[in-house]
Image 1: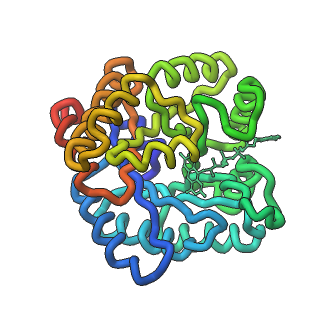
Image 2: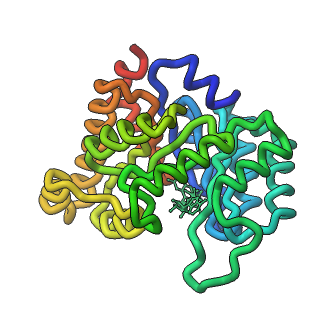
Length: 288
Ligand code: FAD
């Protein structure tokens, strides 16, 4: 099923993300985790694509397994920055042959070793290519409430985002953020710029202390004082940090839904117990 149809059909949706294994010996463990998350019956699941495309066959295999064995619609990610047009076209064919109807079209991070970028500069070019190969794919794109790290002026980032949506994005998923006001502000600015597709806030449950520095480095997200105090108080005890992190993410989600932002994407990081904790905290809210 297309995600655009799922979003239209349900007032509130919750989706989870998994990432494929980097090496084949970890495949069975990731498949098991993905199946446990699928058993929670999220509205859909997304499967990320390893930087540089190194894990592309595992993305396709995990995505196809979740959709065909577990019956949960899947959003398969695809990045283009280190790919040739031929490789991208072959992945789109693999996705189509596996019955996948949704692609998260991304540029990907530019490799730190400065390897040559191949045929693509921006995600909008990938979206154009997907649409020209098969216009029936439902396409998601990424957006950044605090601005993309490479873009110096937020207004330029929003202008580029508009170009990306105009190229054919059906919806957008945000980078993680820890203060909902950041998102409300961003939504106001993009709606003013004429970007009207659904925006799914990406919620990252931080459940261990070491994740904080990694997540900030990756996303550039601002850490609010309330969040910092939680990590200071609970961060040295894994069990309490996990519980506090699930509750913080659940509270973020409840506030979003209360404010009418009700299609939520959770970066569940192959952790069924974290996805289950969030589903449990929201059970009546999602059901009702
Ligand atoms: P783009 O939309 O191309 O934007 C990248 C930068 O280029 C921005 O600064 C933008 O302002 C600028 N730009 C865009 N168009 C133009 C233009 N015409 N002229 C000048 N500048 C322009 N990475 C992975 O490797 N695998 C994944 O599975 C993955 N999943 C993700 C999911 C989500 C929800 C998010 C938010 C990110 C994900 N990423 C993933 C990370 C993503 O690949 C990086 O953030 C990457 O740096 C940007 O990708 P993009 O698709 O947003 O790029």
